[in-house]
Image 1 (cartoon, rainbow, N blue to C red):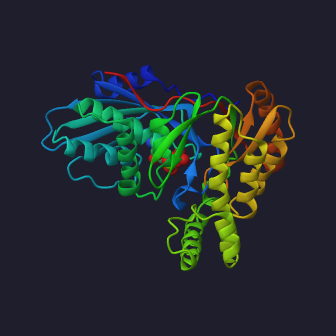
Image 2: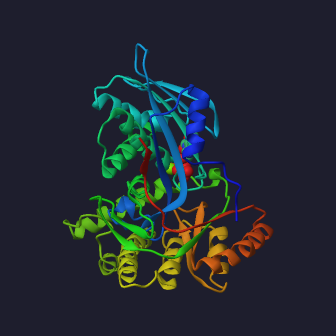
Length: 388
Ligand code: ADP
Ligand code: MG
């Protein structure tokens, strides 16, 4: 399994804070990364998702600082050399990593009318840029830590929304609410069943282990298509509404309606994926609640739909899915996240996945000349304040 990972826990972040700021922090909070079990490309189509919080976390230590004329944020991270500084009352985007912290902290400081300066330290073992949402973990942990030092009550839903507003409004990444909700509200042994347009959520028991397989495909090969898909979905919904004006979202369309509408290719395939995928989420939740598992049919069905209808897979991801399901004790596998690279999940029992990991890693590297990263995880706890 991939590691060694950087030290990331309450002690490491406390030590970093003391080392860089010369006094102990007042609050430490942590928040996990996430992975989506099923429900891909449904979030921006009014559909449902089923993420879990993973066993990798980001830790933020916070303390107030007196004496500045203008409230200022200073931030350090164990994984980034430079100390970030930004004004909290009139924040501007730096394009650097501490924007995630500024975007969260500035509105909390202004809303609380507490014009204090803040020092923040970060440690994390969530791999950044792998699609496990290190950005949401960073934002959510920051929200809890900053609210803690300011004495502002911040329920977890509010922490998620503060984090989401920072990412979309301040950092400028057009993402749905899934990542921040999963990081804030994930629970050990449970998956979060989230309706993305209403933010209604509930939980389903999830006791399986996952092997998270990062394909290590460079990011430069992964961009561009996402906006194209979003535009295709908008157009598909527009055409469906010519016939069914009351249709609230693309995910709300029944598969039969999509087929009946005879949309032009590829809009018909995009719409069919979204419609069926949201129903697969419901089937998965029903199976988990009945004491069962998410079946191979659902997992591989989701993958094949992403491959053939949504066209967001790649040969590397297809290989991971096809190869892993031939291994003993593997229940199913699929790409997770937006696709075109990033991660796949392999689902099954822990012992089987421990055995599968080195086989998959070795064969993948030999075949694609890429060194994958693999992590075992189960559904873990969401964000929390560690110490006050
Ligand atoms: P993902 O959320 O999939 O990991 P993103 O591009 O959304 O990828 O977020 C990664 C970015 O978040 C990093 O480039 C960095 O700016 C910031 N980030 C995440 N974790 C940390 C950390 N521990 N310290 C500093 N910055 C971090
Ligand atoms: Mg992110």
